[in-house]
Amino acid sequence: MWTDLHTLPTTNPLRSSTFPILWYRGYNRSPFYEVAVALNEIPMEELETINPFTLAPWVERVQTIADEGNSLGATQADLGWAVRAAVSSSARNGVVGVGGVIEIPASVRGGPKLERFSFTLGMRTEQNPFSGQLAAMAYALRHVPDLEYRSVALLASNKAAVLTVRNPRQQSGQEYVKCIYDSINVLRVKGNVVAVIWMPTSAEHRLLKMAKKEARSASQDGAVPAQKFPQMRSTTLNIARSSQRASKRLPDNVGKFSKKVDAALPGKHTRLLYDGLSRREASVLSQLRTGMARLNGYLFRISVAASQQCACGQAIETVEHFLFRCRKWTAHRTEMLQCTKILRGNLSFYLGGKSPSDDAKWTPNMQAVHATIRFAMATGRLDTQY
Image (cartoon, rainbow, N blue to C red; front, side, top):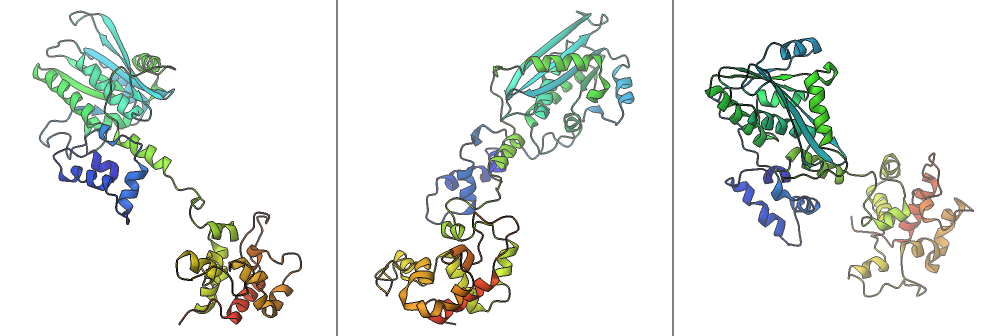
């Protein structure tokens, strides 16, 4: 939605709403603001403008041929058109190049000849092969010679581009589509007929192969766009999504204590830990696993307790100190100590967490977890009012 707002026309009131959202610096920031910050590196003001309609409903659409099958397209492409043009695009080496050829027969003034063109449309982070073919179509039609009462065929290998020209929608590439129709209207005024024909690359048409060669020459290593074109919304949005795609791990600044206790992501073992527990037992376990417990170490940090020292006077009252070292509760630890001999003092073991040394077949030791819960409840240290 953030990218969609930036592609609206400047007359749309929603377009102006992005400015206060981006510059709002309140304490409680909305999720929309966080999206704006995450996409801050993308120059949204350089995006293309997408209008509700590319063309007016009454504007005559161009004739297109985009049927499946190689033979039909090849047959239509060779049906005695006065002028034939073929376009192609190439995305490689971090850029998008476009190219094409215009075949002018001897029956047309200035013919016979074969005009070639190619140019670098933009960086791959701003353009794509789809927009490249639309740009090539617009360029080819604009450079068709002055004709009267002739037929013109435009060959393209990108089916999506051909279908977009047939039925333009509220989508990327509107500027190129408008240029295509402007050139077609100029040709129609003089009695010319224009058709756009899709041909798959497998057809290996002579003109399309030449157009592809020109497009690849414009996307060679080191190619630089000579002119700045509007960025495609679809390409910008895909790049933004890929950069912000959620990874299967918790953020580094979230749940440091919980990740220390349990290296595994919340999942089936988490449900196993809490299923069957009473409300009081679940509260005790969640306090111990998150570190947000009614212990002086945490209470002092949130300015609730006057001191972070344990009542025993030996150390700061943390979860580890409370479970394993505080002398006040030595008599209550008998059941906990009986659960293991080699993992005594291991916080992950007693709280049902996975330690980095555990293998893929690890499962929480529920006997140790329940013993830890009973120990904490026996001390009354983590009790809350119910």
